[in-house]
Length: 150
Image (cartoon, rainbow, N blue to C red; front, side):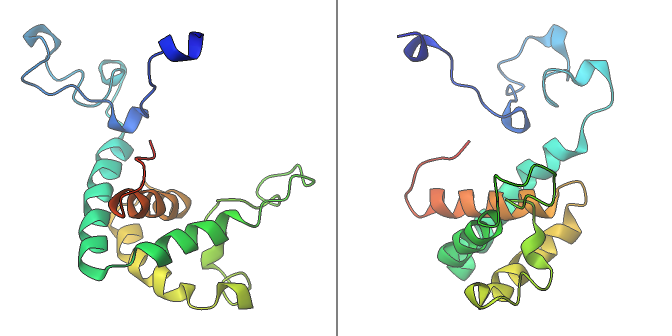
């Protein structure tokens, strides 16, 4: 099958070649992703890498895996395929942090999860709330023994 032979695609944010393994002629071109030579480095790459480490530390110290997964689930659960316009169609867009969504009965207790992530939204201004919420969930699943979600 073609799918079995296809290379696994890794998100750009995590594609880096260790300096010890890349040719010297490349300089620092691959340390910021493959297209860094064509323009200034994208600050989101470093912020995403740092965010993942900070989330791992938070999850280890606060044991908050379930509530972070629940926050992401409830954020994405607003998606309505019948509505074609974005962001009106809902989905994993970070809108759960606003009222009235946060104060809906089904979301009771999720202000605690939002509180865990607020410091990361301030620390990483180039990463959206939607991405912070979803990365927190993926990291929580991974750290609980689940699969790595690329």
